[in-house]
Image (cartoon, rainbow, N blue to C red; front, side):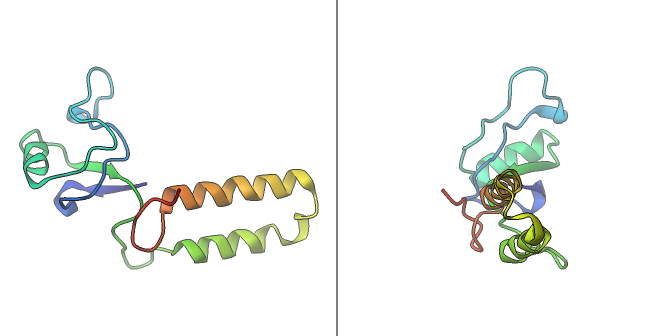
Length: 112
């Protein structure tokens, strides 16, 4: 999942969280998660002064962003000395699964 400015949103991206007006999560969402964005929907969000949204995967890469492979490599390195401990191994797997689910693959698609 990635938070992006609305001005960088493109048709075909999928919302990862509900969208609320003015960022206020009290009340009814303007649009629900898993909705595929269209140009019309993006324009409506602009008219409602919504400035950012959460989308699935990691579709936009900035200078300094780290790839999924880099993050998993660092995670492996941090757990090198404690991987034999079953609890630490489980913790490693939880973090690795989180990275995979939140980052998706290099194309920005969620991994299953």
